Length: 91
Image (cartoon, rainbow, N blue to C red; front, side, top):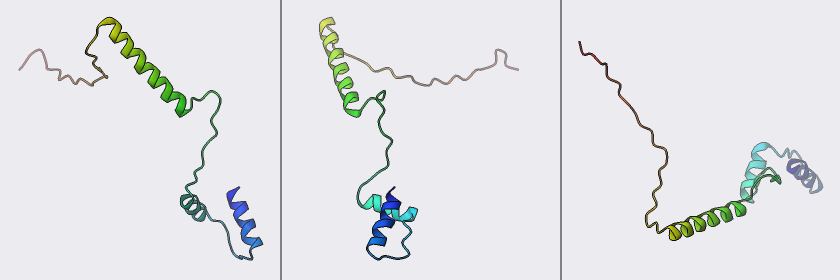
């Protein structure tokens, strides 16, 4: 769509041999801070909604910790543990 419109504008302004190449389109979008994005579906969560969920969750954790008298909360992300299996008999 951008290439079609760019070629049309070029023709209207008497610019010949303008092809609106992929590089031209990429550079144009970069100059004007444009990007191609897929439309958000209704089932997708917007960044604002995600921020609200994070804020609400943090507040709920803080309130629960206060109610239960918890003063320390640890984060226990999964950590890889490597085992070196030794033979039962040494020859």
